[in-house]
Image (cartoon, rainbow, N blue to C red; front, side, top):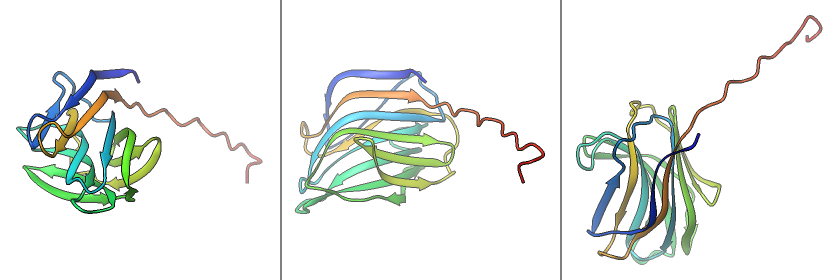
Length: 171
């Protein structure tokens, strides 16, 4: 599908924990996309939010890149947030030294997939949050130190599988 919503330009955090979602978007199957750059060891995080219903920082799926202070890798995590409580639903591979490039979070049915530069880095199956919702991003770190660029939300439409004709000689 085409872009359902987007924000042009670079967006930088204005609080130590900053989250923003798009208004007037309500999709259940979506791809949330943004360009990111996160260096290991900084204590910062950047992530994408899907099926957000709120209020505040509650009720959504969250795909996160996290750079623990002093660590030499960037961790990849998938969470669901219900009533403000984060529950890990998937932990992906670690990304050595830094995570730079396009981050894409696909939430389709009960599947949650996170890609970095078109490489699958985390996957989960969770059917807890099924209702359509908005999408956005979340970042943590000292003010002005975390940013996202080229943010976009696309509706994902699953194609119909072709009909298979087995005919009388198939078996």
